[in-house]
Length: 79
Image (cartoon, rainbow, N blue to C red; front, side, top):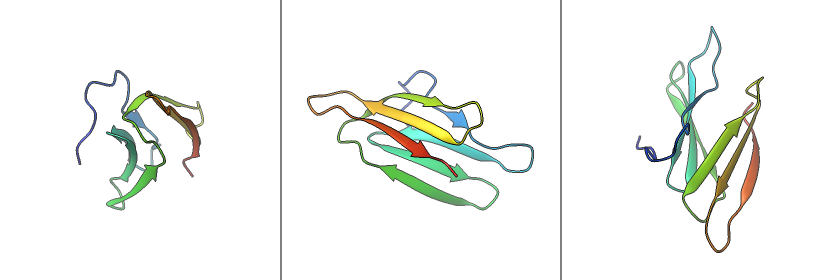
């Protein structure tokens, strides 16, 4: 998969000691990739390239934002 490498701190680990799960932004789509299951979930909703990402301490919640004329902030449940 490709990812937006220009976004500082855009890649996040959502896994724990038993699972290897990674979040990466890819243009206007967020990708949750589970290495253990070799599966991915696409988080779609942004019209513009994702410009900011933050994850809660318990890794259940992820917020992403884009910038543009119709900018949007989305709160995602990662579970």
